[in-house]
Image (tube, rainbow, N blue to C red; front, side, top):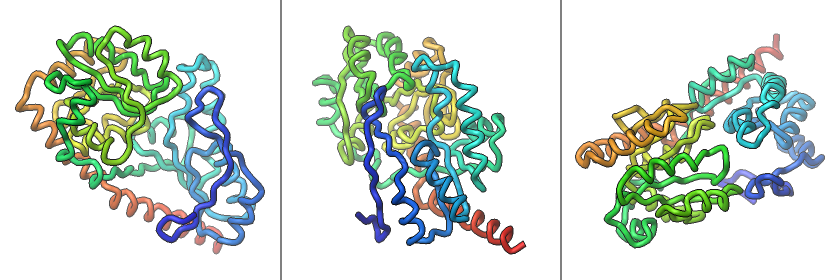
Length: 333
């Protein structure tokens, strides 16, 4: 297949046992042939594991400059699956893998510092992009709000969008929901934790929407009063940017890359991780002040516009050029 003139080569994959929604692709010998034929100037490996390791291997074998980027905070995921004892080992593996690259990119200042703290070298910041054309405030609709609130559009509507998995800590939204009179929660997405969460939220007005895409997803963001996000494992939080682009103020944990995009009291609210009362207070503050909420909506949209794809792509091109130029200089020397 092709995308805007670029060839896309697919590889067979199988679902992860603990997370069937995610598929794992393994390296194939055909990768070498593809690279040899195409002769790229640089290889960019995203989250180098399994398939990504092949990218590192062939970059070394074929003497092609290598750039890697870190998007999934795997060490923090381990504790949510009873594997916290392996965190040190995983960091050591990540260090050995990422230090093969001429440059490592992270999408938030917090993650840049985290990787540097674990002796990963040559780390820089890559500002991720969000589709500000797709996600817009004017897509708010009474029909969507009625759907998400199960026929109660007049009630305060909280929304969560993303993977429905343990590391997202969606269960921590329940105290917030219970503390706000008549509030309703819409959970958009799916994942291995869905059934457990259905039981957890069974006595609350919570609607498990399932997957939404495109304009439906954009309308869902725009039609809600607040996007509540308790996760502590975000390298940045692309769904936060999508919500903000749609004019939906965010209430989120002050963790990972989130403070890079959410400024407390300006375009959303932050609370300390594992502080239920802080999460409740932040959400109540957002919902209680109608005029302030409109200002937050405007500010959220303005912040999202700073993270458009054009700037992110231009920055990445600059990193590519820098790595290629440095490698060429090194080879010439």
